[in-house]
Every structure is written in structure tokens, then in C-alpha cells.
Length: 222
Image (cartoon, rainbow, N blue to C red; front, top):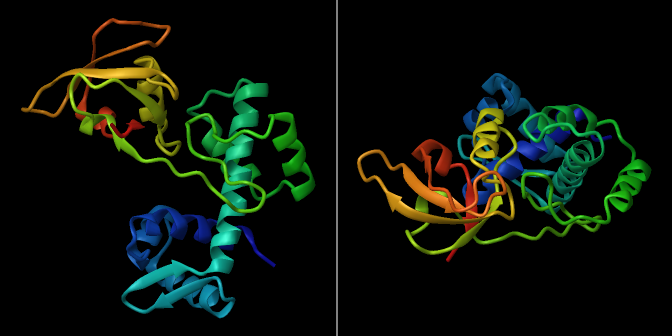
């Protein structure tokens, strides 16, 4: 049986190993807010269950079995986020925490009904891809807004869901998924950028974006 704790660990490992490096014990502990000793114990258990390749002092990768399970819980999480946002009007900066609780409770039956009601969506409210029921996921080649060269039009595709303050700031600037954006200047002293976008709140109006915020907003790579 895959418990809530196991699902949380699998999700954490999935996100941490995406740059090609293993998910280290300390990194997992920081993400989940648990002690390193607890992480070590769980990684040994995941290795025993065939869900992770774990080497002491090096870290862990998900096996094919572990990856499939991680994508199942990520699918539920992102479908719930979209449902809460679209049908219950839960703000996009709050749906993540609500989905964290609900993702462990819904059945596959309810999951598929939510998917159908939403029209089989490809992305959640923040622009993150929703894994399919067969475990495939559409990854896009993105860069942060802070890396976007000046005067090259692009489109906002993703604002990660785990930073409510960033989500509120991005929404205040009108930088939501599918909004067109162009960097018109960059301040080399602090990395901030001046942008224009086609956001309904301020179309064509120059807006100042700090480096911290621009670094957390992801757009199409030119």
C-alpha cells in the first residue's frame, strides 16, 4: 500500500532529481520539513519496495515503479488545483495547499471524473503540465523571465505553485500563464527588468519586475 508519506517522498524526489542529479537526503529533508534520519529510513524502505535507487551519502533516483507512482499523485494534485480554481473560485495562490491535503484522499474513479469535467486539460492553473492517466507528461523548454533577452516577445507559461507570495505578485503584475510579455530593459545593478505585456490589467503599460519575481516566472525559450 502506498501511504500518504510515501507519496510525499516520491513527489519530493521527482522534483529534486529533475536537473539530472540525485535527490540528496538533506534536500529531501528541507523540502518535507523532516529530520535527515527520517529521510534515510524512508529511502531504505523505498529501495526495498523497488521505488527508488538509493545510495548512502549520494542520494536517490526514482525507479520506473517510483516514477509512475509519483506522476499519479502529481496528476491528482494538479487536477484538483484546476478544479478548485475553475469551479470553486479558489485563488491560484491558495489551491496548492488545499490540493496537498486532497490529493491523498480522492479515488481513481473521482480523479477521472474531475478530469472529464475539466475537459481533459493539459495544464494546471499555474501552467504546470498535468500527467496523463497513462503517465506521460508534456515538458516544455522554458527559461525564467529574468533570462529572457530584451525586445524578444515571449509568453508566460508557468509560475510555480509552491510560493503564494510570488503568485500574488505575479498576478498583481498581470503575469499569468498565456500572457504575452516582452522585456524592454534590464537593470544590471540588481537584475530587475522593465516589461510590457498584453495582460488585461495593463496592456502595453511598462511594469517594473524585481529580479526575485522575474526569476520565478517561466516563459517560452526564444
